[in-house]
Length: 407
Image (cartoon, rainbow, N blue to C red; front, side, top):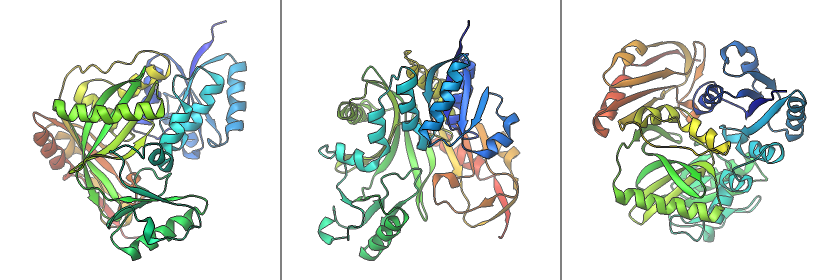
């Protein structure tokens, strides 16, 4: 009997890296199964032709998922890997993989990286860790606990995509943010850390046999409104040896501290006057346009190479070409209901443009950004230099207008 080589995905977004991973698995010849708790995906089943089987399930209920996996096995599916490219499900997918297939990653390392408190404590003796304090649940704030002078960053240990990350410029703001987070989840600690200034970089990494393979070093542009939202990404086609070796040093310290043999992760780090400072680590490929911008820059699919890693194969990140690429995200400055979007065609025809993506449909409620999920479009452009790519992307993004009516 010929068993169906199967990869199970726990959750996917409609677009972005998580969806491209499913498409890559199908292209690689695997039977793709999606566990989803999103009723809309079941209703729009015809739009997911790359998903061979879609199962509606609570993706936080491990026992229910085990039952479904056993059903698949009894039907003749040979489960080769269980993975997730979606924030909330990476650790759960890894635990299931431990039980049902050979897991080439480390569930323990993923657990630590998913929790910002655990990460800070694990790396507290490294110079790249910012000064921080942990305020435990129900603990009253004490000025002696301040890691440094204001401004300070206040965040939840489980925040993702800039949700629940606040800037406190004085004691009153600090108390307000602490109260808000403690009320939101009274069983969770709150992290207070020094605010570090400097250029911020995102680094995409695959780790194979304890060796880091850097998929991309991307300089970020941050828009500060109600939250810190990243609206610009500049993929560096070339980097200086100094920059690369300094980043390598940080990554190798993380690999050693977390005992990572194989895995995919990305880090956000800042170049400050006191050296590099680690803002955060996430144990997965970045979402959104990341896979597409790296493909435009270097010609490889990071999600496909990640899947190879999870299947016990050797990933390859040898560039087929090197282009400077810039991705500009589009946000809105006021709330409203989307009537229509204009300028998409003009943006597509603009110089250097590789791709234009508009997320919301007519009738969607739009809001100024409180998280990365409130970025409503992006333009990817390439150029001869980083500055040219940036100029092309911004010019094209300026063509896009969201026409809204007030709520």
